Length: 373
Image (cartoon, rainbow, N blue to C red; front, side):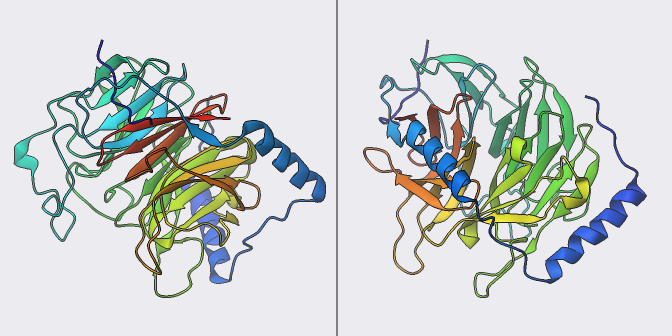
């Protein structure tokens, strides 16, 4: 068995399109005035939130066997139905300045798809490779999600597509987007970054690098609606003005969809619209001023949000680190890091019991495991 080199480390009723169009006009009108940013919990709720954090503790780096394996840039990490970490990596391919032209079209199609298995399932204790697949399917892997039914969802920024694979299948059950064709209409993506999936099958796509929007789909892949518009780092912007929505997490029991809004250096949470569709996109929470850096990956468990940030060089250098925040009010609860310091964290995932975190990095290409004390 190979092992990973760790540096420490229903049926859903689909409403008619006319109804959806009317609802979307109502939703978009909300963004013409400043949205409410904060949900202020009662004193009892604050005690419950603090109690949750006290029992869960701070992420602490865990040791895995230091046995080498061939992994490229690890762009995505998820946890499957059996709490096993699954990584999505790029093999010999790297994303650099030569990868795309000015119109976001992939320049290296002639090189063909990646010829090694890009999706790898690991043993959570030993780090042994349990399963791998994906050779010949992808060109530039990015986001990875495994839903509660064991379906694997991925995004490919070179293909400008998203894929759904059923368990133990390497044939896509669903493909959205046009192959190698970036665009901004309802049938295209432009470098989609992340996917979040509800237990009902409803799913959300962060169409991140070019379109700065979040799209909501039925379980069958019918577009229900979208939120988002281009933001600016130079001027104050509203919560639906994204600058590279890079990661998504759905907190389903709270009907809350949270976004790692990378270049706006914030985490924003919106109504997910699962209980009341007309409320989809309603702003709920934003991270407080103690949160800094550019969030790349985001995950959640209970009332906790965990995020990893990359380096920032604006007003002083911000080093990569991990954050724990309250999902109720956006407050920073704690910060954390690996023993040697995170270098280029790109994604994060958490086990179903909330006791283990996994952080994927690109350069160095490692997966770091954290135990929550």
